[in-house]
Amino acid sequence: MNTPKMESKVWIGLATVVPHDENFDLGFGKKASVNILNWAFNRKDFANKVKSQLLKYGYDLNELENVKPFDFTLEYGDNLKELANIVLVNKTLQWGTFYTFDD
Image 1 (cartoon, rainbow, N blue to C red):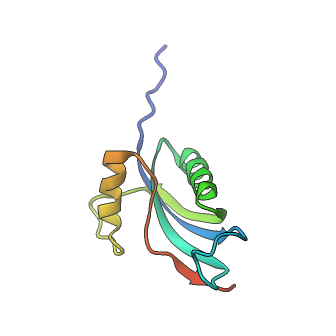
Image 2: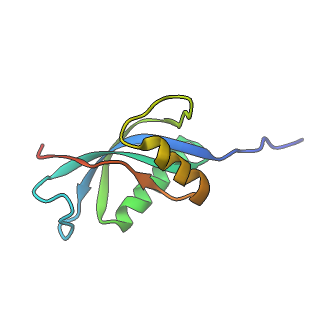
């Protein structure tokens, strides 16, 4: 019996992140929302990779929503299509603009 082949692709999700105490990248913002793109097999793989990479950059993942494969036929703001192409080539996490808030 053949095992179905899992295919990797670019995924996107909207993350709410909280900086660690020693991370001052957000200035006085306590949280930020940011579109994150990464190479993954599925939603769970994407979420695990995002969480791991954010920890390396000094952030905790508070929430991850709207996770789906990136659709190259749609128009996106925030240079997301350009970032998705970088993910295609480098297979590395990319993120858009951080939008900070104090909630």
